[in-house]
Image (tube, rainbow, N blue to C red; front, top):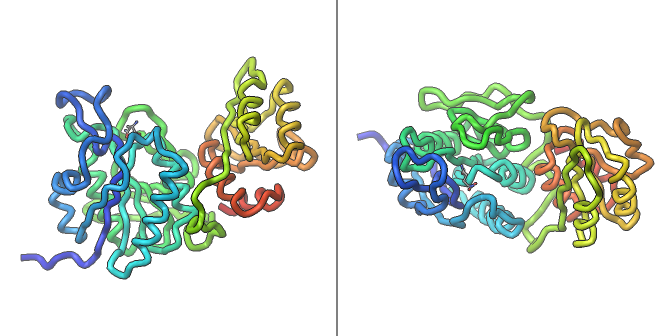
Length: 334
Ligand SMILES: NC(=O)CC[C@H](N)C(=O)O
């Protein structure tokens, strides 16, 4: 018999379609997410035992549209405790795909370890024909058990591809190839039971960040307001009235600010609310002093972060400082 694999990987299960089940084998929408427990996920892929000694923990059992700041703090603290143990070599987190990229980026900024952390989900429930969960989970464990993944930051394993937390995004509502890193590029592939890396991000992550959530039990309120034709400041004003400490403006184009919205943004900034100019487009740079005079307005630009990831960085930034120049530096660092 083969010797047992030496790497120890803990699977933290949080719910999603990877733990979902549908009425029939052709049910690929309208199924129920977050029903199958972590032990059954592990039992469904006996091949995992060939690549790592696997342990499971059910951290949550939710659809990821319900992921909250509180869930993130609980999850990140658990990840840091586990990775500090000598008998844990890597972590896999099973997750709903809707906010998987957000959880991945949050962890990328707060995990204090070089050991691999890999997020994985599925686009089809386990009951479906050609369910993608089992192979995705197998690849994720393979990656978390690998030396290649050490020091690469938080990774996402989907559809035989390896993506980096900062730049990956869900691009399709339902197809198995939904996760992509358009333009900036995925990091690598799985093939023949091995991960292969080709790219690394130039941005800092994990051990090289300045963020420490170990003593936090809440994160500052940061909300996103969307730009569109015929926009009014109603949504923005509501968010400010609700007490937001920061706002991500998901502007049209390269982060343009409509003249009907600008006065409310300026007023919010004067009240101390941090304003980040981001773009709903999803790719490309929002340039400082490009589409608006950010120096004069005292706004921050998101660089290439999409709005939902800019929200995460701004929340963490606000746990350290309210200085807009410092926060701008962080947006060019992470
Ligand atoms: N494919 C999925 O995982 C989507 C299921 C659910 N909406 C979630 O994100 O948890």
